[in-house]
Image: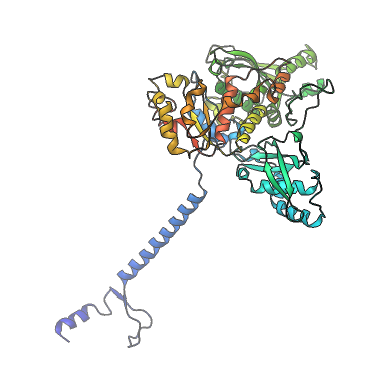
Length: 582
């Protein structure tokens, strides 16, 4: 060994701090080799880094699987309240405001889920359909030449089997079936069922009835030859029970027997005096936009819930000129035309103002122990927290100041905003209007795409929307929509464009549907017309612009591919120039 090798051996020997001996202390020929400390540290660090990398991958994977993007129509009511608190000004609202504010059935909350019986019933239908068909075919002795009897269990089994495989099943949930009834011709049966739309977050049930043509198949099974469109099985439609001639010349249309929007009544004087009430005097919100009305109305309901009181509400509404053709306010509208009063009174404690004032006047004693105590609150600056311990029978908020001091929603500003929770779950759109939505979507078998075209005053305002008019012109629509929607699809166009033929150039590419194509659903022979006329004391109710906005928007939200104006068609911002990032 050379001298240099000896030096290296001496310098890097067992006493060197760069080496540590593994195993026993005696270095034999079969001993374990020495490992440098630096190499051990590098190996340990690499193991730690790899473990952190694996953990990060797992976390990212879990987040990617469970995360859902913040769709404003599927957020919780608390998120919507926070969002609107940032967007809606504290003293005024956008004028003109012709947009549609989301209501309770648009929110993805546990309170809007289907009740347990409905889910069990739906699951029972899904699982039991194939078994029912097989059992019916196996246990029944049949003659193929015998005329079809619609009460035969095989008919309903065949219908369930068909619906289980139907293409529109992906859009609805079948809940229950009714007994089939004979159709107008031999071999035809009309069958009705109840269903829920998968795009709707509420537990509402809707009704469909279709005409089925059946024939004998292999063995004792029945084969379905043809199926009618939505609500084609008119023999299975329930007819209303009305007083009048036994054989009327024109059969009245079927009605929705599940709607119960009667006004709750206080039963007795003792019950009235036992209650605690919050009464809002009419303020400056009257005849303002519908969005401001909802925002203020929910403030009152939220305060009543916070104070554990019954809210006194006025069913009389004023429709703002923003929602009318001539731009003039229309007073005397009924709350029940637009919103679901049945759901409201089941969700929160409310009484109608007219009956409340009559009972108050009738049962109030001016002196003595029977007197009804009242506290008048002259300003919104008296906070709900200050009224929390008030023992008065009636808290009467008076909004007598000038605008915007007399707006209801001012009560829920400032410190009160942290304690008052607006009960968004209590406000649903009218079931009568939603029935029209269901009929329009059902007529296309829920298999359609949607196009939302905003024009009107926004297209005319070149300062706030410089590109909107050109970007939504007929030629521009053809150029853009044909790239986003498959050809010859059912295309429902939700729009405020008043000219019916404006979209004619799209008809050579798609099966175009407009709201005006379904005007028979609110004509003087419709279910909606009869029910709203009865609500209005026998006077016909016009199908106004806000009703059109509700129906148009809800049909659009149920479409499969949705093309939005401010997301897909134009570079302009939804709320005007330089507002895209607000």
